[in-house]
Length: 164
Image (tube, rainbow, N blue to C red; front, side, top):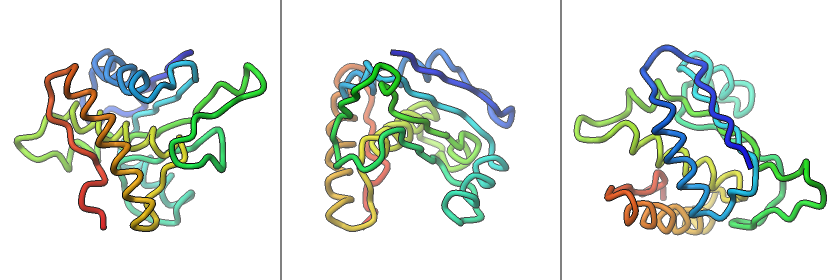
């Protein structure tokens, strides 16, 4: 199904074709290409506003995920009954925040890929509220990124590394 990728910011340059290619690869590894996915790239002002509204945290952040299917168990692929329900949800990437957090030796698109993978895992029921939940999410992110590393020649590491 479709991947809708929108760039609603002008704070940092964004090569959508490269990001789209990487997002499609992540979807393939996770086995969710049959599902629609929305990815929206926003600046610090917008991601902070959303973070304040939805998480009651008045600060910019890297990613916010809004699942279409609620109450999935970690890693569970939705089993829709209707064609219109083949939707994972939406991910908002705080690309300005991500860009500002990149270290000098890090590739911006690698970090976007890792952050989007983290967001997709949230859409598939993974959370990191407890150490046990974090372990499951970390292992899934690690597995997906290792598969991507094989195909892309990168050295991507999970976003949630060292959370607990």
